[in-house]
Each structure stands twice: as C-alpha cells, then as structure tokens.
Length: 502
Image (cartoon, rainbow, N blue to C red):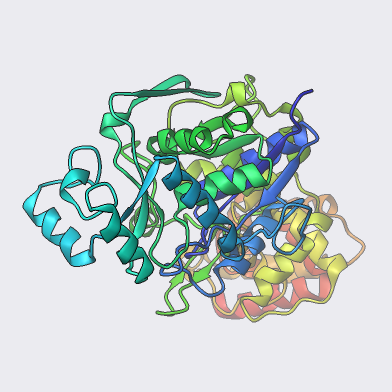
C-alpha cells in the first residue's frame, strides 16, 4: 500500500521568517495538497539559547497571510502531537540511550574550555574519527570512570559515532543519487548537556513519530543527510525513512551565494515575509507584506524561484500551483532573486484584481498614512482608475491621494513658462462646461471644441489641466479624473489653480 503523503515545515522560532523558509513551507504545502496529503507545522525549539519570544506566533502569522494553512500545528493539533519539540523532550533520551547501548553513539565529557583549547591546538578542529581518541569520552575513559561521571551527573553530551570507511548513499528526488564518505563527517552532538536534543536527533525521531513521508528542506541541509540516514538505520527504522527533497538555494541577485538579510539591507529590499521587530533590540526589519505586496503575488513569485510548469506561464493562483506542482519540475540550480521581477509579479496581481478584491488592502494602506476612507463605492472607482500604475499596494496612496485631498501645491515650473491670460480665460470658460452628468468622453469633446474656439491646440492645455486637478504630471486620464472628482470639485480646483498660476 502506498504511503500516505505527510510533510512538515519545521522552523526554529529564532527571528524573522526568510523568504527561503516560506518557499520551503510552500513547496511542502503544494505537494501535500496535490496528493491529498497532510501539511504539518512543527516548531523546532530545542535550542533554547536562540529562542526568541513571539517568533512562533510571527511564523504562524506569516504562513496565514500567505494562505499556507497547516492541517496540524501547535494550535490545530492532530493525532501526532505535541507539535513543539520542547514539549517532546522526554521522548528523545530513550533514543540516545538506545544508540549508546548499540555502539552507535557515546558520551562526551569534554568541557567548553577543553574544546576551546583543542580548537586552538588543531586548525579547523572537528570532533570525529581523527580526534575522538584524544578526547574525554566514553570511548577513551575506563568504564568505571564513565559510570562514576554519569552517577555524579557530570555535564556531558551524546555524540553519534560516525563509522569508518563507509559510504552513505541515498536518492534525492531532485538531485538523484547522492553519496557521502563517512570519514569526512564529524561526530555531531545528538543530545545536549541540558537533556535537549539537537536538530539531528530530534528531526529523525519526530519525522518517524509523525509518519513523515517526504522531507522538503533547503540544500544547506544536504551535508546533514548522512547523519540523519544513519540515525534512521541505527534506530531500526530504515524501512520507514522518508523520501528526500533538497531544494535549491535562493541566491543573491548577482547569483554569488545564498540570499541573506544583510543582502536585503544592502540592496534595499526585504527578505522577510512580514515586518519583524527584534524584542531585545527593538530593531525593525521590513517585510514584503508591509512594503505593499499582495499575498497571492508573494506566493506566486516564491513558487517561480526554482520551479516552473514547463510552459511560459508565470502568473499562477494557489489553486493552479497545487494542480501543476511536481517535484520533477524543481530545478537543481539555485534561483537568483530579482526584486524588480518580484515587483512585476505584484503589479500583475494588482492589475488583474478587481477593485472589490483590492479594497481592504488599499484602505489599510491609507490608514497607515493616517487617512481613513469611508466611501467604498468612490474608492472602488479610484482603484479601477489607478491600479495599472501601482507596483505595490503602498503606491495607491501617492497615486490616488489627490482624489481625496485637493493639491496643496502645484508643479508651477511645468506651467508658468507657457502660462498666459488667454489660457486662464479658456479654463474659466471650460469650468462652465463641466457638469456632473457628463462622461469622460463628453468632457474631452467639450474641451477640444472650446480649445479650437480659443485658438488653442488641445495638447497645449492638457498639462495645465492635469496639474490643476492633481498638482503634478501624473495620474490616469485627466477627464476620467474629472468625472471621478465630480463637477463641483473639478470646477473648484480649476479656479484655485488659475489663482495660483496667475
């Protein structure tokens, strides 16, 4: 019988959620939904020294915003909980003890000072095959001394004993056959002195307990694969081992290395899904959400970083992504992050969304600027007029605020050099022609006829008219703006501008 698809996203609550982490969650989610499986959110909080208050809630909020909803999680528990590793602490020691008893692991009593001394003595020191015999551990100390140290609760860690001269091989569903020489892998810590497991032991124990069928994780975890595969075998679970999927890295824009928060800070774009405020320092790191990205666009652009469906299609809804997603179409090569392309995705989603879908986003963007808008019908008209001009949701404010506030100043440099009394006379006459019942086409026709009557070419008058209504050289069709503003407001702005231009 085919194994039921169960996948997990297992972040550590140590800070902001990098877009690479969200992509890992997304690929897990798409695969699960494609195969009628289960997507699990598991919090890997075994490293209490790096735990950050509020980070778990932040991670959940980011995933909710993206529409990546877990079937099982710390807040939606299923039959395989707890879903925080810290709450599973009691389950790990038995596996460490089993590994020691079977000769696959050992206790290491080296103090931090002894380890520091060894690092100074041996360049690039690693604790493993070539060095373990010179350290204080249960492989080198007499049995009675080891027992005495354990009886006295002497601080110690449990390390895996990597085998000598073996090759660990497995099939990665993206990379194919992968092999590792065990002589080149160090003896990783499995259980820390405080009794908490490290990632290596906890991830294997939890994946087995939660019946995980496929492990999607970043390529940076590939060097850990031989340790995890050996643990699956050493614990007697080799037949239950999940299939491995190591995702390509998200690279810097120049392709030179993995994209980091530092790169975003340096180049002026976010790498976190949402704003993150460090609770210790109060430092704010901006996110895609607050910058003005639609969640659908963010998900779309992440999916295309390292995957495509084999066609030229670039815009996908979540439903389409689920339908078309396949591991076979994930690239082995890293994917360069291009912020201009990211904004293009957002622009396309804004452009093809109707005003009703954008309404709440736009209202929130105005609220963040201290402006509360209550006329939804009017706002929807405005959205339809300007959405093609917006790359970010935050662009709606500068692109449309003149629909709600009359210009406080004008681009006089664009008008004054060619402004004449005759033009002022024309606009005073045109103001009488502006009526509420008129369409944009009718207002334009009247404009052209009156311009001819005053011996002007319409093009000479269009820029002054635009600046009268919006204050500068921007915005959608000027007659559409006039219709949206209404006759009274348009006439009022014409008269105010004439006074400013004269």
